[in-house]
Amino acid sequence: MYIKTEQIRRLRREKDFSQDYMAEMLEISQPQYSRIENGESSIDLEKTSKIAEVLGANPLDILEFEDKQSYYNCTNSGYYLNTFNNNESFEKEREAYLSQIKELKEDKEFLKQENLSLKKMLDKLVQ
Image (cartoon, rainbow, N blue to C red):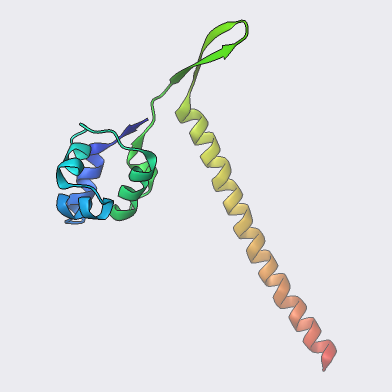
C-alpha cells in the first residue's frame, strides 16, 4: 500500500491550504508534512485518515494498493509464499458493501411506507 503523495498535494492546493496549515491540523511540523508530500516519510493509517479528513477526501482516494501483495505463511512444515490480488479482493468487497447499502436503503423506504399505512389504518380504527 502506498500513499498517493501527488494526489495529496493536488487536493491541498485545490483547497488553497498551505503546508503550514496541514501540519498544524496533523499536529506535526511543516518540514515533517513536506516530507510526507514529497514521499520522503512514511505515515500510518491514522495520519492518512486525518489527511483525508482535513482535505475532505475519502482515505481510499489517497491510498494506492499494489496489484498483488505477497506474504510469507509459516506452518510447521515450512514457509510458503502466498500471493493474492488486493485490488480484486477489495473491489469485490466494496461492491458487496455497496449492494448491501442499496438493499438497506430500499428496506428502510419500504418500512417507512409500511409504517405510514399502519398509522392510517390505526387512525381509522380509533375514529
